[in-house]
Amino acid sequence: MSGAVQAGYAPPTGPDRPAPGRRWLRWLLAATVAWAVLLAVLTWISVRDDPPTVREQRTLAEAGPVVDRAVGELLAAVGDGGVAAIMPDRLERGCRITPMEDGADLQRGVEVVVPGDDVRGLLQRVADRLPAGWRAGVRVSGDGPVLRADAGEFVAVQGRSSGPGRVRLTADTGCRPVGSGYRAP
Image 1 (spheres, rainbow, N blue to C red):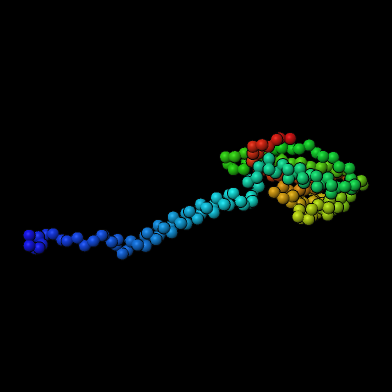
Image 2: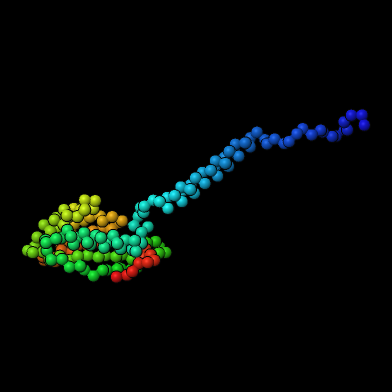
């Protein structure tokens, strides 16, 4: 052979290069994968470390000690303002958390017999003696004076007249999942 090139044969030009318009597709794919990994990591951190934002994220087993503490604070706040008796626990099952999940509502309370009929005075004294973080206050409604406070962990505290010379103070969890480890009253 004399170095002549055969007809119909093209010599190799080296490795194939990607088309110039496809480079941005690789960057887009890399950015999408990085974004998905970042979201997965942030979700994992949030689930592990963030406090609950709605009561349905805490079970009755987790809310029970908060209710117990609230009843203790209510008893201490009544002090010598009346004769207090702890009411039996009330657990109402069957409320709906989601269309597929049932829950339960736990309510514990204190019944107070007031000397005379100064319900508003007792409620105001109780509100003043509750922890400042509870933001307790008394308002007058159509049914008479009502005490409202937030015991934390989505536990509501209420107080109102339950008859002549009687006040009922309650701590209520609202509808939540029962959860494992919950000991029913």
